Length: 165
Image (cartoon, rainbow, N blue to C red):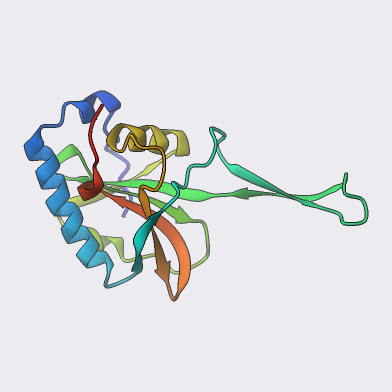
């Protein structure tokens, strides 16, 4: 379930997290991962971050083979970005997701999140800024996840935090 009444934490709020907050986030993230494994398969290794360039989207162009200067179609690589927060302290980021926009059945988020966690939708620039505050390294912060063997998104957990600025 996506929450609309809360806002994601600001960069300043994330900077003010105490070590106890990070420990709680890590424990909640580990529990979330265990619950998610009932519904998705999470790859054992990380991949490139799903943000691409500074543009809102990553674009691909399909060209006509006979007339290569003629574009046949432009495709934007879209994801839904969301963040999972601790409902008791919304500054605590438990996980971040980039889910492919595909017509697969939605995950049972109410069952996955329970009473403790909440999921908020984010724009790509906001998700990227929050990721950069939590995980300052440039790439390979996200695990791919699959449903029925097909890659359907990427996820980053709080227990991966490698340091704050």
